[in-house]
Length: 78
Image (tube, rainbow, N blue to C red; front, side, top):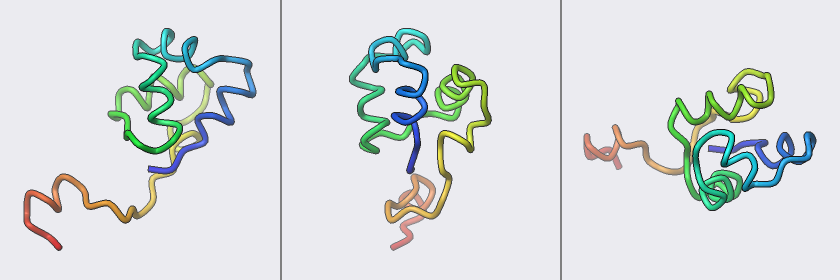
């Protein structure tokens, strides 16, 4: 999932550690989200968007991914 998290975070002067503390995750988790190594749960994405006073879709870009979804994997979709 693509995102603009770093742009939003830096625009208000938060470090990864500070943002993590605000939403209850580690600095490493924030880094993994920013570098698209980890996709946050919908609840974490919501909490993050609330920090920036915007809609989830402004921070996280929900578009077709090369990665297979969990549903596709469980159905054996290739």
